[in-house]
Image (cartoon, rainbow, N blue to C red; front, side):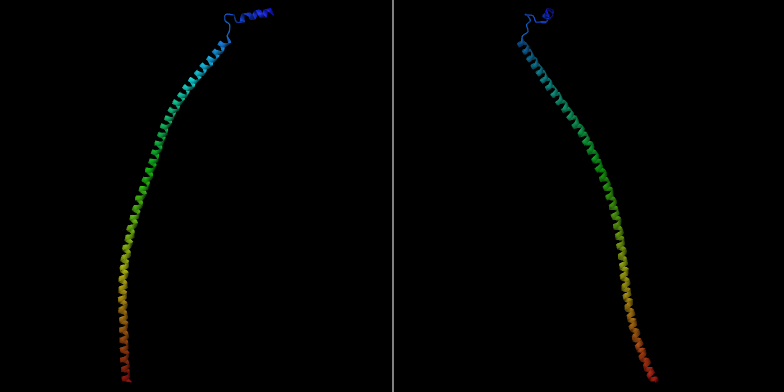
Length: 159
């Protein structure tokens, strides 16, 4: 056993370099405080860099969104212009069709007016002819009656 003790003797602290527990605790606490301070500084720096990065990313995203929104607005405006153009062409086409139909209606109205006038003329002519026929019939009856009376008079003289 004496050899084991002799072997451990050089490892034991010497009297001049005696280890102080208080100094060790102060060193450990100072190390912990320095470590915490470094962690706090690193965390603060990381947060600041993260905030700057997030702000830059947000700004980039806003610009990209603005560009995308502008493109979408342009596409919608173009679609609206195209639809408006189509509607204008359709409206013009319908106006032309309506004008054509109105001309046809006016033409038909004129034809109907002419036919109505011709019908009125024919009715007046037929009325005049009917009156003339009625007068002629009356004249024939009157003439027939007078002729019968004469024939009866001649027959009475003969008889």
